Length: 274
Image 1 (cartoon, rainbow, N blue to C red):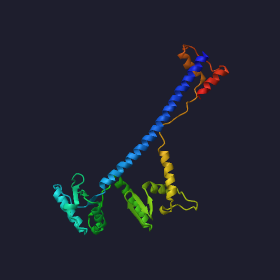
Image 2: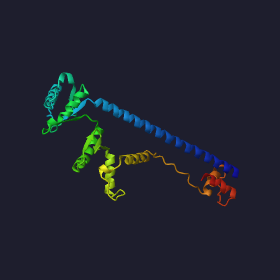
Image 3: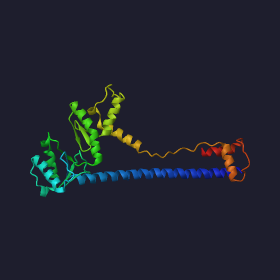
């Protein structure tokens, strides 16, 4: 009987090893899939940026529910001419359309698709001539980039108030020629709120942080985030009596009760599955 018990325990150990191996394989496959997903997301982002690189968005032009495409184009042409550049609408404008549905009391922005990127750059360069009006011109950013830029604006204003040179470039904030994301700046806020200080005992300011050090910390943090959510727990120790009773049922001794007082050999067998 003890030999049968020993054999059954070995089978359990074999099944456990197989399960552990499957879990390991799932983890490895998940890591590969996450890496592929990250690559695909980067490609999509680059493609979207390429598609939008000749576009601009004009906000503040009076809206009309009955406005047609020709009227929209004429309004766009009038605004661009006010910037002082030589703009030929028939040769340089590919498309001009309102974004979204008409809503009384609100002005829909106009998305302009230009024929050449150089035309776009000239318009943006001269957009400052519209200062003081209710109209402004911006690049055509993806929705997630627009959100990132909104989150960066308060940080940019704060940096400028402190006398730093600060500007937002695409989805990054440039302060004193150092590049920051919202994650970087939120980390700095956490340090300050937690009264974290450097070796000199003074809290770091935005321009005092080390980009190299922060990059290393971000990579470590990312590694932690990318850890699988799969929990692998070592099999818990089972009471000898419970194991023997279960195995007893399998080998035809279902009505018998077993005590934990067995020979040393059985104890050694049981502990093999710990």
